[in-house]
Image (cartoon, rainbow, N blue to C red):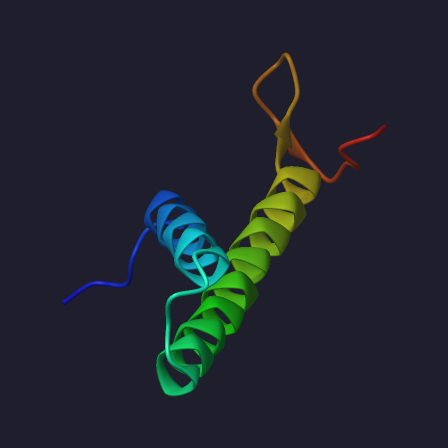
Amino acid sequence: MSAPSLQEDLARLDAIVRALEANDLDLDRALALFEEGVERLRTARERLSAAELRLRQLREAADGSIRLDDVAG
């Protein structure tokens, strides 16, 4: 089974937040959801950081050459 996509992680994080805000969970379930949310958030941040690094490294020039560049530059 493949890892969830960024969109799937974000959707699950949203569902976890809604469940935790509902205040009808027992402590064990709330802790389990919180732990899952922390892990999904870490994974999403890693993906976003990797994408940002890739954008910095690979900016295609108008002539088709690849150059190192900064996103803000």
